[in-house]
Image (tube, rainbow, N blue to C red):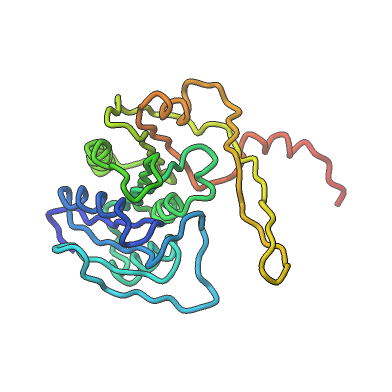
Length: 257
């Protein structure tokens, strides 16, 4: 690995040919030496899934000139694990960036996101990590307005590092005029889900997941508020899921041993 420029791992969940990862890798190429490891097919909504019951394939591919790229048969988290163990061979990259995702990963969506789970895995490996997402699901998404912020945030993380056990969840509004950056908390929200039941030609039921995003938070310090007001939202998140505030209450419970 090069000593003069930072080594940057680029991953995603939309697949190695997605326009979002193309935009991200070209920004990272301006900063350092880029290695791309991405799924060979879309893996949205995979969360922190890993492949256990079948072998993984990791194939070097030549898609964009001057960028080292690998296509992985597994999940976004598999991509990070294989990159660290087999490509970087334990010599950790200086930065892990995931995205740019086609669609938001704000609020509760972080729990389901393959994009953010890849960044979480980077943080678990003690690699400064960022997940980037844009509020546009289409293949024609315009990433240009957010690229200067992607570069600035990445340079700040490389310069300043991140607190242990944390990473950044960054979301961009779909606008040509991003007003700036807001450091936010995750908005309290959930998906009100329904399953559309249909019948196949054999008269057996099958189901399509549908849902409505329900915001239960009127705060002006949330990622939802920032995005609705045309700011990029930056939420520091952690993978320690301990509810520390609840421990004192639970210690007051009586257990008969």
